[in-house]
Length: 399
Image 1 (spheres, rainbow, N blue to C red):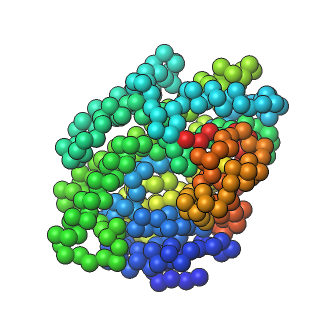
Image 2: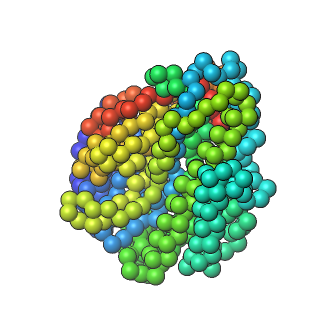
Image 3: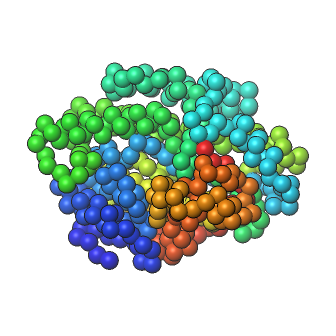
């Protein structure tokens, strides 16, 4: 499959017609600094397809970044083996759910982990630094009725949708903790505001676009500089949120698992909805990874499957044409609405057999069959990454 000004890694995986139309729109933008790179998990998004790397020169498209700024993954390997886990994992799931608020829930107040040793002290310093930086953001006076108390109370929370916390086993039966979340309500607020700012700027310049959500902000302008400042802050907030959740999960596990254990592989913490300045083909450019992971040579990353499928710890190959990137997951093949209409609770229970997780109507939209085949996705990007560990979920906490 070939499209103008586009490089695609989609062999053996389906790509919907609506996504192809979005790709054509992106590839024709005048602000591009090179070709658009399409990952095998590509699917329809807001303005731009999810599973896409967009190189831009002196401009950023806020809708391409999305509203869950800095959303990404974190994973650690433990010294525990499968045989160290109890026959029923229900108590572990409930302990995690008590410790980490899910869905719309948050902590009652900002967490203070300073009593948890050096790690807790370091986390508290990051929390305090985020709070201090937030009040200096130039976008602050434009955030409207944003509930600023959520800044602290949502740090260390999961959210809903496709966000999750999982226990997994690798090929050697070692236990891993893996989680997926982002910048919560504050990232959504910043992203939504920036999208509207970009549309306003496009109207001022009388720029006509095939999709208004492809509107961009020009580097050097006041809206651009204010957005980038808030964007980088939200990306740091998202990474801190994941690290704090991992800290809480570790505490929960130590309360319910009698055997002492330690972390044997330090956290892989990677964004997959973000922007950063990078150099490719000898040029400095803004790289937007919308549902894509950085995969520089020897860089570790995480590619999760769905609730009942495999996930992967990968090592990047630094493929130049992909802007040293890879997919961020399996990618949806069916919308949430379609999944809820086409599958039942019984289907969900069958497809998540052997996984300790919710099996009710509230998570049918996350049923494994709503996603592409993760093995096909991995095969399509064999020249982008190599698999280091293959993980199988045994417990999944959903919002």
